Amino acid sequence: MKKGFTLIELLVVVLIIGILSAIALPQYEKAVLRARTAEAKIMLKDMYQAFQVCQLEGGQCQYGNNFAEKSGFEPPTPWDNDECDPSCFYTKDWKYWSEDMLYAVPINDDTKYIGIEWDGVWSCWDDDNKWCQKVGMKKGRQE
Image (cartoon, rainbow, N blue to C red; front, side, top):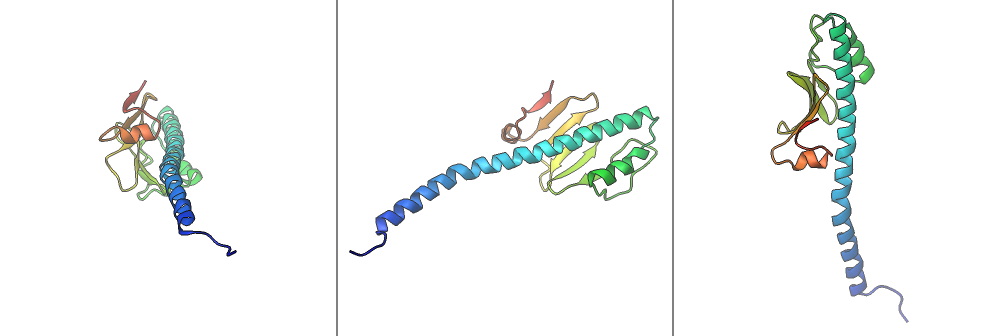
């Protein structure tokens, strides 16, 4: 008797592997996105606290350079030590900046963001509300 696999057996194994990967890959990508978002939220919270300290110290952002060094951020432009402004920061997955709130935007995608407003309220925005759901937030302000 010959030992080996029939073509049908091999096709069934390939089919099972295909089905499992079709189910597992999206779940894996979703888990990675949530982990990256959690990292961005931690960095935003740290920046928010740094700017609260900056405001309490009368607007002198001497803490800013220390924050950049300790957090691993490499700001492309120098900090303006006369104002509470983070300029613009980049990490592997996100770029950060402030206007009316602190934002984290995915690299290469300016159509989505998570942010923390100056009163500590979180927000999320995207075009179709699917991304905010994927990162575990609802679209708009998170009261």
